[in-house]
Length: 123
Image (cartoon, rainbow, N blue to C red):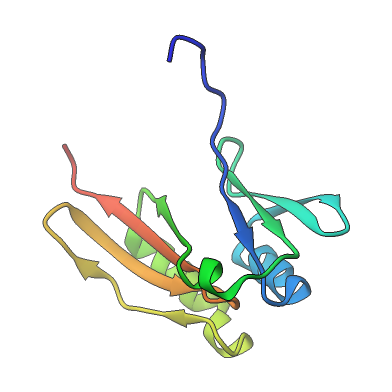
């Protein structure tokens, strides 16, 4: 494309919109309420996604998001300190796994969306 792109954002559904909003705020994302059934969650100034009060099981069960992080060990430590697995019934977190390309851990949000938090090997 010759035109400059500014951002790319995915839309995520929520089985329980109120619970999912609280989860993402506790995760550390900044919420910007857009309407009564949709908000924007900012990971940082350049990374964000839309969360909507809309749920289709097949869609949500097949939704995945990959978030590249600088320090996967630090990210894991922060996630464990937040104790989200105990606070939210359906949240699951794996240990860090090592792959040929780098390292990552996986977390399911309260609706079942699979998050990949990964750190690529130095190039």
